[in-house]
Length: 220
Image (cartoon, rainbow, N blue to C red; front, side, top):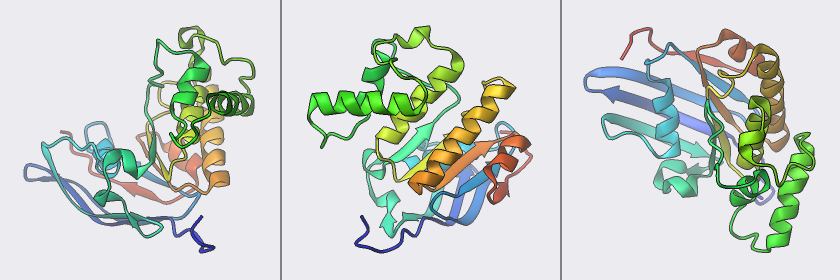
């Protein structure tokens, strides 16, 4: 895909994010394909603003500078939809008016235009997520763990360049949390996706097995 060249991963250079005079983030890091960079800090410390900046939806109240490149592509020069950042939040955010299969098919890139192929891709991914036969289910009938797996399937099928994880395990119980961590990190590794995980849970950071960047303990 990169003309035979090895993927370089994600490079964050001199990222500084401020709210007024307060500096929330000051970070330079390289995240290799399949590696997880964990950004830790208490609630309100500005962790999620880093993901917003990379994804292209930073609230205008913040000022930010720095460069973000992935495999030599300048992400910040692209519109948000062109950045292909796969994002998982605390809540699965499934579309309530769509079936499970339609939720996943919705995220398949537009160049796959054949509807039957889109449906088959969604069904195959559900099998992969141990949710075989769930295509026609209403998202409201799913357990928390099942919803989390559908949200992950929807992100993966969108062919992301990188994954941004905004505390996606925090609302799951302990057993499910461990399962989802393994599943997400394993998928990222096998797809060679650089990952940024934002969390305040030390166990998340340990499970990610990558570098950890800690940010301020101030609130606000």
